[in-house]
Image 1 (cartoon, rainbow, N blue to C red):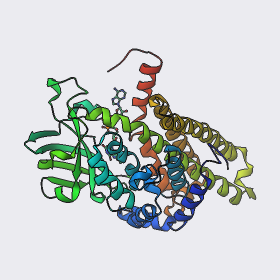
Image 2: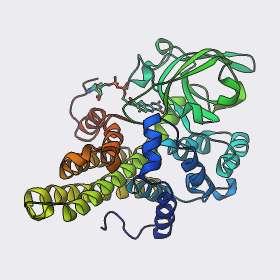
Image 3: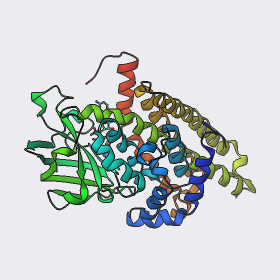
Image 4: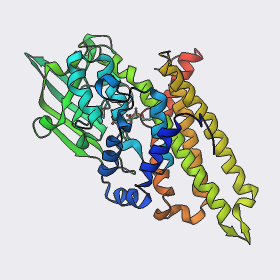
Length: 386
Ligand SMILES: Cc1cc2nc3c(=O)[nH]c(=O)nc-3n(C[C@H](O)[C@H](O)[C@H](O)COP(=O)(O)OP(=O)(O)OC[C@H]3O[C@@H](n4cnc5c(N)ncnc54)[C@H](O)[C@@H]3O)c2cc1C
């Protein structure tokens, strides 16, 4: 099957596929049952250098562009694996790279690239703010050479499996600044924080995602861990969101390919009424439709990644790519389950697991409605509803 940019980064794709072959379905099924973290898989990706493709060479990474990172994540997902255990490192690192001081970059980036430090956690969402990030209330009060942080975050993934967290909090109350101002980004050293002002509680979900709730109770964070300027944190986080959306979209393309590969193979093999089910157009057309939808979305992902790499504005394209890719992966998931009949529900086929996993992407990291709202008001100039 050839889609998107079939010739882009063939060596990377081949190497990722080889690595993923060491982590087949039974590995993921066992973790899924226990809701356990895929430590060996993440370690293997780290050692192979795939998680540091975006870190510049001067800091020990490969210095490649976003297109290479999309190839890595797409292949992981196409192989039936899941990059969600570690994908955040790719885009969260960008906050430090773009806005951190030279001391912060030197202190963190080489160690992240070498796999000595894990920067997997990204703390934005709060239970009472939802998508309206300007309503976050987790507050960092400056006290001499440190900040004292109080508040709550929800859905903070990989917090238990990360050495560092990029945390967005308020440093000025919302009513004392413009809503998007007065927020700041802190680098939280999880090793020194958990149990010392930070409590992490796992939240069990319908998929294996290592997500958690965080409670900050007078957590002390050194002032030197402030990224960039105080009060400008929301802009720094927004800067990273285009990369995040494009990378997640690539995972969706990988998922869609996984479902299409599996469905096509099964439809050729499974015989009912004395012939392969794939001979029936009622079975083959949904597979073909999923392929068309995925291919269109893959081109959008490539386009958004190319704009990002060229340093062009790409907020709308990143959002549209994410919407199109998440809908393509969900349509492919539904088609694949249907193609497999009852066997689609059996754990050993991995379809039901991937089905649950790919559903997330219509909600996180940004929900479909919020993307539609962006397109409606920013592109089509329709009246704003909020
Ligand atoms: C498994 C998982 C992992 C996650 N990991 C992280 C993480 O690591 N770090 C992090 O910071 N966050 C994380 N999140 C949070 C995720 O980004 C949010 O769940 C997502 O952005 C949606 O926000 P919400 O859940 O608060 O939904 P809400 O904002 O409460 O919205 C609920 C629903 O209402 C709709 N809606 C809301 N307002 C409007 C409107 N004005 N018009 C139309 N529709 C609207 C939304 O589209 C959505 O469907 C994770 C979430 C999950 C489930």
